[in-house]
Length: 152
Image (cartoon, rainbow, N blue to C red; front, side, top):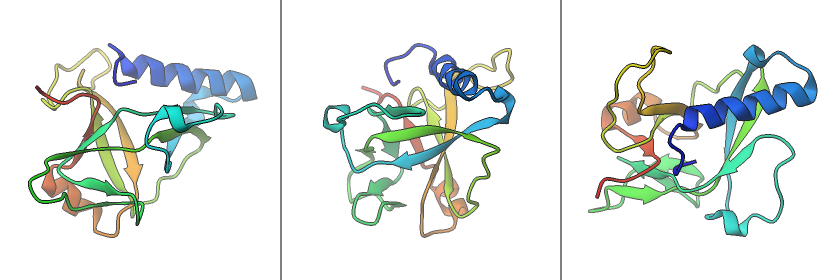
């Protein structure tokens, strides 16, 4: 997905495929997320039955701790970290866990964009729920976000 010009369209397409497969209304679907142990798609041996597995994301302002499987503080002098593969699962009537950090995913590190006809920024893709042992507001104050691409 990081290579797509319009990743929002890809995400909508994934939801549409799921809605058609199970004959359910698309407006009842949202994504739930599972951060996998695999670091790259090359380590994935089979396609998911539902949803998509995506790699290539970066985390800015924090890191994903592979041992605890949670968002945690960045290591000293390291501003960004890679993310493992994330399984985006279409889920009917999804209710997010309020203890998770609703991490914004942006196409670029600029984190700004023009408001599109949908009313959302052209740079914002989706909010990814990630487990944390801190108050999610802490990560908001830290400016933590996921990125599809880093600035040079």
